[in-house]
Image (tube, rainbow, N blue to C red; front, top):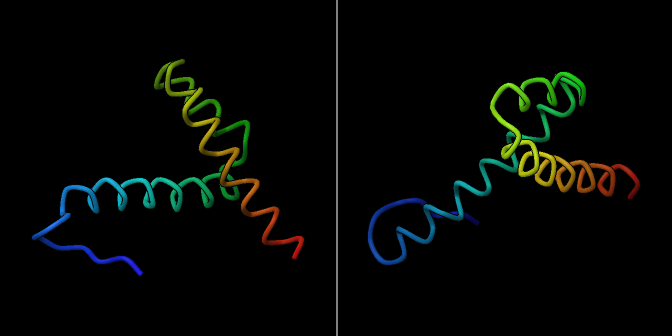
Length: 70
């Protein structure tokens, strides 16, 4: 249940929604582009982002694998 809009807690919900969007983005990237290509894209953006993207992608990958194994 996600509510977007203005009013009380809009700032906090904005942060949460951005985190959710990032999670949603990573899973299809991992499937469609592949890990090698994804690392090339990340490397072109900078090494600092590689660490963050790796952590996020790793989490998403574990979530997907957990879902498939059930």
